[in-house]
Image (cartoon, rainbow, N blue to C red; front, side, top):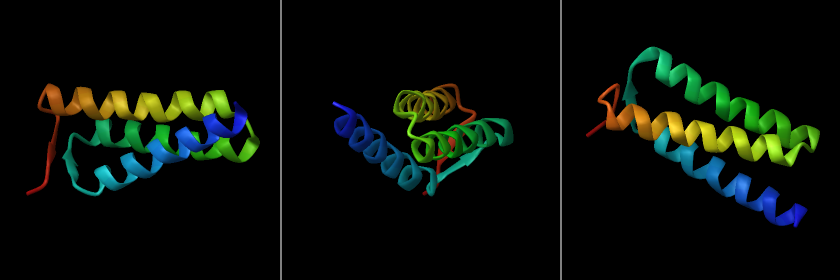
Length: 76
């Protein structure tokens, strides 16, 4: 179970880091997303897999909400 959680967290971290390379917009939204990504890496290094996964999920939430309300946009 522990290894599965680690792999899922890493998978979603890779995906959001890739996706963020094509996102621009509101500075506060971008900073919050990057902070959650950074926190996820930190917790992974500490072995706190639950918090690491929570952080990557929050990063995705901020990204999706930002896109939905028009605070963020995808670069062409």
